[in-house]
Length: 274
Image 1: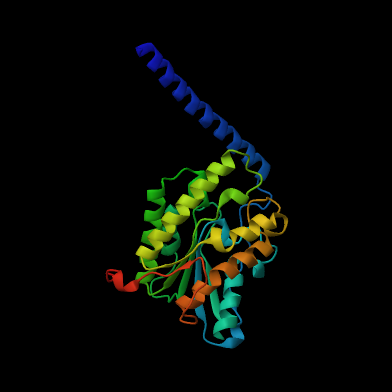
Image 2: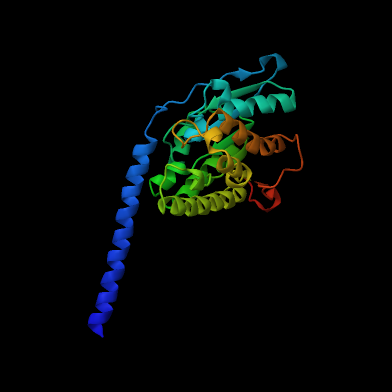
């Protein structure tokens, strides 16, 4: 009986090791397929958009390569630029864009990004999109959301409204083989839900990118993804910005009602900012 139990236990261990080996191999294959055809530097879109509209609102975009706009064909097609143009059109005011996001950033890098905003500089809205690199580097979810919550609280202390675009669903990434894609999808959805809960608890608005933008990426991957099949294309950033913009405008007091997939914190339940 003891030897039988030992055999079962050994088989389970070997099975787990086999799965881990398979996933590591698949991850290596995916990295080779994706490569780095876009480089590691996103286009610079920082400027005042629609300056003729006068006194500018200040938009800060933080996070990873999606927030930085890697994959866009032109600066005006990046996530930050598309959000800035949408804000200007809706509010009738110019928008100063500051992009702090960088390619390869994890949630733990948000503090360093915030530190680059000089004290005393007013920020009206901060948009955060982060999480994909946390998944690929196997950062524990609890650690990821702790860094995110700290970043939200820091920006709110500076007087900024904060909107978080939660981690996209990795299910649409065709270069990632199965079963790694399914496992990645599950992990990304778990992280996105944890990010949403942390954002709302810290007083930020949350947008479920998997819900609001994800179906478009799955339905038209050739259009929505750039040449690496991993980062959004210019069309993909248009869709992502369109997904986030309603919460940005609501944070500015432009709209009271937000669409499905957008989540609003109950500010009355939050402790006062220190």
